[in-house]
Image (cartoon, rainbow, N blue to C red):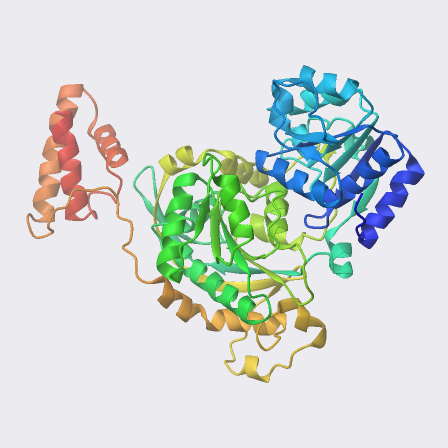
Length: 565
């Protein structure tokens, strides 16, 4: 086996593993800390001392199969990442194989036979996926690997949205009131990893803005990101993420400038990741990136058969931008990523930690990471608590009514939400920088940035030209808002779906008379009230009440009524 220098935490975790000597061992380590190397190191030692004869690795995604095999090869371990369920024996010449949880769930009996065929050590990568109540992964993993000689469970986020399913092979302790909490055999959190230089420091640039959206009743509502009720905040958030608005182009322009700063300050291959909620939005975002920055981004979608190849090519290239939905949210190792733009409505602690983890992997001193995100309370809370240790908790304490409301709203499909509101537009402006859990806002004094002196401890932290402090960085991002707005360029605002009618073609008064006549005719034919007909019309053709609607909306409503008649 090829020797490899281990990080201090990996040495400490190895000592803990050997002292316990238990069949199951759960390691919780922050994303980017090096869980893959640790797992393979332990498995290799078990092969060397003949405790095990084969290694089986299980990962969440197909792309990670090749990544694990490559990492194992560097340590002198040969793992087959292509072994199908149709072939029971492990390929000759290999020390084991890599499978996905979905592959195991499809044929658990096959994997059990492989496990029973010899002394096996099983590495369960990101084992929190086995807690999904809606999938069969947990049961399949339990059935397949119960006979294993040793099991090494790895996770960076040992919790899930649904906390009522036990993770296989994980110990739980009672914490009172019938609740259970998972117990890790070794923990290595973000704060310790940052202190050791294992991960990059990260700052969060929060962007606010005023959004306007239309309800299903035709009412146009406006609100600022991060204010108002939970429901209004969710609607404003969704509207800001609409690719037809101004928020996304503005933030992309600001993030691209930050990327340029990083490249000029000693990270010449720095890359940026833009996360989208769905594939159509990802394609629209890619077009915006190309228009705003002048660089064609790489688009990585889950149904693209070339997705794995595209990821590998991007990782080794000098390309600036990659746009993805969930392909780069977990486990994918692209160390040159230093900027993340949060263009999605996902806000679970699991997804947040895994996505932010894509820009945390440290390479050289002085590199830092920046996450651009909407200034909404759920995301700001997750950003502020990045350094907290989290465990998988069963039967969590009751949440407030507001928390239930926003959780249910964000869990709904994009299709349902888009039918409830219609995004009109949203602008963007820098709100504050989140550093070490504290919001740092730009000062009103334009000379404050020039007067402020750099703090030596922060110089490596930010990695900007001039070695700026967090306060200075906040001032810089704020001062560049006008440039970002200019780079984003003008966009046509989204209008309610109406016919193209010239305002001068017919007066609004005549259109309202015609509308009322058609409503009366339809009410007489259907034996319905005028009020109900008007409500149906406004639902079919959204917009303001007829008394304040423009000619295009009124004409479209008349067209709709004529079709009904």
